[in-house]
Image 1 (cartoon, one colour):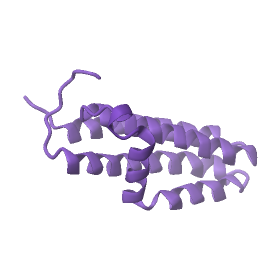
Image 2 (tube, rainbow, N blue to C red; image 1 turned 180 degrees about the horizontal axis):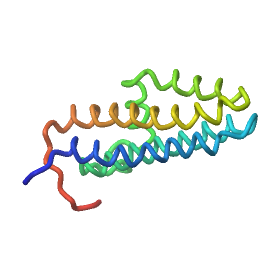
Image 3 (tube, one colour; image 1 turned 90 degrees about the vertical axis):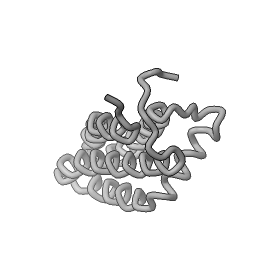
Image 4 (cartoon, rainbow, N blue to C red; image 1 turned 45 degrees about the vertical axis):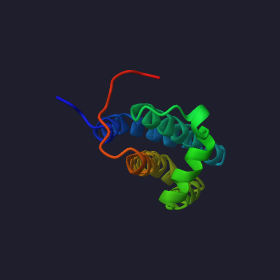
Length: 134
């Protein structure tokens, strides 16, 4: 039975949300954690875009570059700034940041991934997933 790329990407997105939560846990250290959280979350988001592009069979390097594609996806989503600010603010509050940042990290990855899926789905609507890797 054929599976659409969007369905495969959503299945894998649940696993990638764990990396967002891990970025939040790593950022649970007061003061230093704010920078760690932001850097970790940015790395996870780059990996999410790369993997979703692979699911759709797109090689980001020659196409338009991962940076340009990520920028287009962020512009399309718009709400990423609010997640990042929420994570930064929570990181400055001792105790609260350790609880809130993993939730914010996982949620930010989920939302970012859904926007990335929408971005690629608009370009390649109803594309059938092929398990071949790039």
